[in-house]
Image: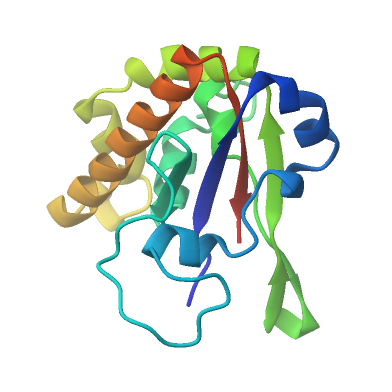
Length: 174
């Protein structure tokens, strides 16, 4: 199925609990939440509308590596953008690469506000430039730029709403 990205918003009074164990605010079956299915589904029919409101759940499918690359430090001596905090991380592979353990992190409300301000400054030119290093001769397919841009816009909307409400969020890459 692949490695995907999910973020769940939490109220500020849950910050301590979320920082201590981000999985306490992440759904038991994030893919089911994202696809609008019952947790633990093995088969079913869906219209692919999230089970949770968009202000509570961000699903970035498999676009997270693009957004990670876009916000990561450009060189070893430069700092990452504040928004990198919401995309940072990698799964830990186990069983000779057959399984993985997810990366999880919780971000408190004050970090979310910084991330929201930073994401608002990302423009289309930066998206294309940020992705060009991954392709031969810097020729990024327009479909890849459109895919990354669509999910970046979803991330911007989610983080803006979470920051506006004074909430934090926990995310999982897995």
